[in-house]
Image (tube, rainbow, N blue to C red; front, side, top):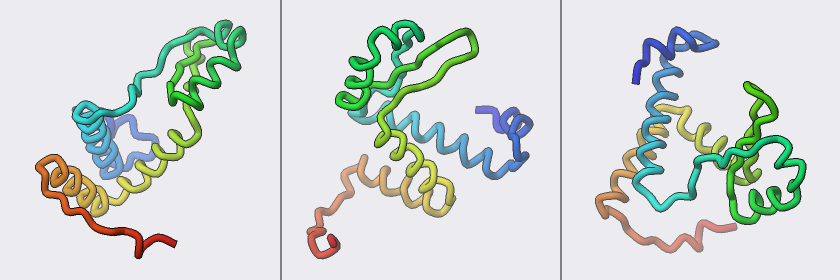
Length: 127
């Protein structure tokens, strides 16, 4: 991935943030490929189809966590996804925005992949 290209186009010009985001993006793509994860590729539909079947598509988004890419006109596209999925993505971005925290999470995922896990009783930590 070309970090220089991203830095040039960064709205803030923040090179460190750009590098962190690109690292996160690559790591997330690898994570998605390596796990049994929901299909994150949006299903494309046109605006008219959404209008004709809004209730059914809404139910698929909420109940089955499907993601839709809705195009009204060229260059006018929105993505529909469940609010909990959106909140999870924002939380993930927040957690990975701190390089030290991101490194700990990466280390934890690597340990999990290699079977270095230990079960603990978390009942004492619950409210």
